[in-house]
Image 1 (tube, rainbow, N blue to C red):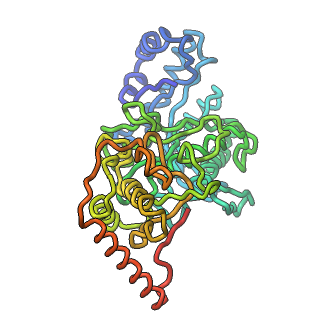
Image 2: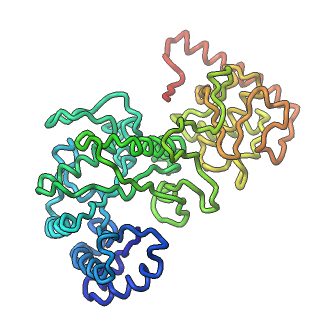
Image 3: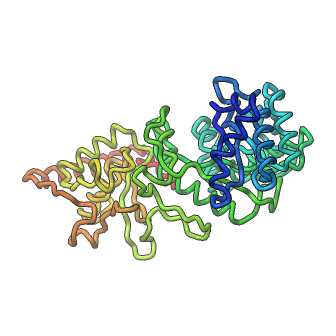
Length: 429
């Protein structure tokens, strides 16, 4: 898929010769050695500040004319990509409707797509729906993990994930305008692995869950509730993190790989693998447990816990320093998880050693990833771990600090029980 950027729309829309020259120089020298199947003319133009939407359809016609001259118009299709903002309504899906403010642009474009059997290209991001309305959209529903169903009151169709609901909203919008033959192609979808403090859903775990479930859903050929069995054509955004992209932290962290080509998390493109953050160990089978930080803990509490674990707690925290195996993802939950687990394993893997004032959570799934290896109780007497590049010297006061901390925790727990203050740790998986 090759794109004509928004900056070139004016030139392509005004003169056929510009489209001809571009095709001659940018497409023909590489085809068919490179399997080019689509040319996208413009990117999310309805979101563009320069209001270039009026230029799109004329430019599409000129690109198509250039392809016809080369005899490639049946092999290479022409379309344009859009954000979900082209819809004024997307819920319930059956009420999906195009934004009337885009009518003068959309009607001729849809006619072009129908006439030339080109798909309607859409960029779908359930992540944004969850991030902006977490009280209305559950994380499980956005991640294809929901055990409940959302019912469309108009059709009775049942939805277990937002991805399908968004696609069907677009299909219903197309049908409302009597465009029943146009297929929908998802040209962008994905989930960020890192975000700003307010973007709590942007984690490697959630990104891996979304993309793994997405791949499985697409390859199963189940279609959507409104289009059962309909083949889905989907592109994951994106291959690499974009470290210079402006905006919130999440904008730079949609990739499957870092710029140095190392993977951010494992992803099975066959759709057959079992979702597992770890690469390796399932502790439920052998009784092994690990200790990680609660995602609901405050940043201040996590920082204090890291400082204690890496100081008086006598944990070697060199692996979470810059350029070391466990530094990425660079956030407090990830760094605290490594520190918590190291302390937990070094102190007998007991419940108390994973407390950290209610901020620690015991799990039976190995949280190791890539070259970041989390300790287990059986491995601490070996070469500590593959992560270690330096050692932290122990001080004579460490044991006193540990004992004092444990005593304070036990006393706090006892008081909480007596006063019936309820649960001290809220954990969800």
